[in-house]
Image (tube, rainbow, N blue to C red; front, top):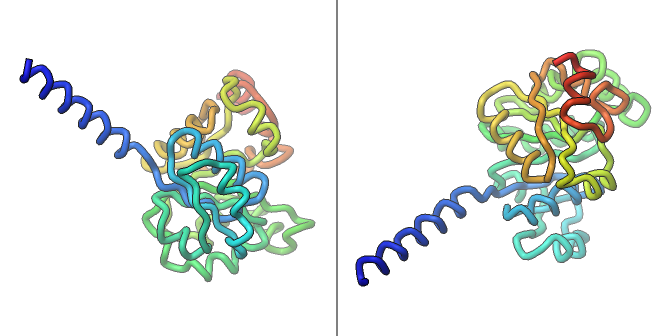
Length: 224
């Protein structure tokens, strides 16, 4: 009986350790509608999330609504704290953000929901659209494991469609980015459809992978 109890205790400890090992520290830079919604979904999936913005003192309501594993901090705090960095900022902010976080993100997975718009983001947006958004990302964020996803679905649809089997085009190249990106999409309640970064413009608003789609629809639209 004593041996059985010891075995059960050891199994419980092992399971607890596995759960802890599987929990990610996700830093969301830009806690607006999209970043706030995704971060909240990830908290509900069991991850720790730090929401950050230029005014972290204004994020307390979001933190309380997200749950006990959520917190707020500055952009620099988030960059240092997170295992995964989620960028959900206007694309026109990328040059300033790149300079602010220079050297801090290399080697980390960076998950970008940020989209360039020529009207809103001016020359920065036009250049990114012309040369390819993933290439622009990599110029601003050298040395990171880049993922792009949730680029053409609104926050309201993220909330309402999470857990319904809908799919998200997920763009990444290296193994770490692909694995982590797919996991975060799944943990937000969606099915990842993995594609190379060279096709990331197809996931922008108005592209063939935009909107609320099933996996079969994404594969058909993208010729997979």
